Image 1: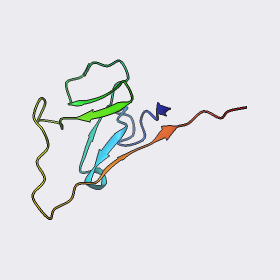
Image 2: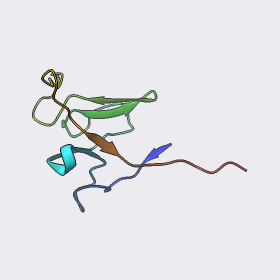
Image 3: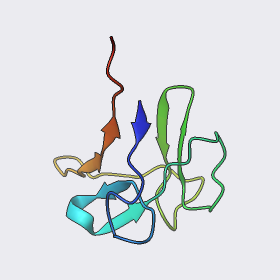
Image 4: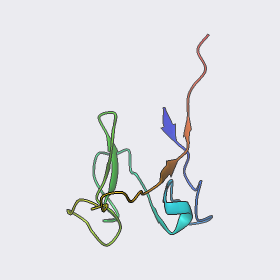
Length: 78
């Protein structure tokens, strides 16, 4: 599986969208948050601390929702 770079916020390379595009980030596959935006994809897990909240969990109030979207390419198998 590969994240589709630049899937959101054209030209910025961002591949994760929050709440219909209110916020974006880049989930690096290097295992390191190279740009400091709080998104990393490593070891099969997507970790999101949130832009401007690096190192802090995203708090969602009881009864509220947050929508996280991302696009991936899944290679075909013979």
